[in-house]
Length: 43
Ligand SMILES: [Zn+2]
Image (cartoon, rainbow, N blue to C red):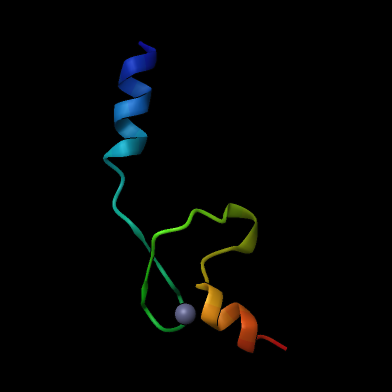
């Protein structure tokens, strides 16, 4: 059921930055697993 798929994604735990471990509210799949702060620092 589509509803089950929606619930599955809605129940997913929040992402955490792989660099600083800060919780990421935004979903930037294309940016990998880094928060915006670490992306700015990235050279
Ligand atoms: Zn970070």
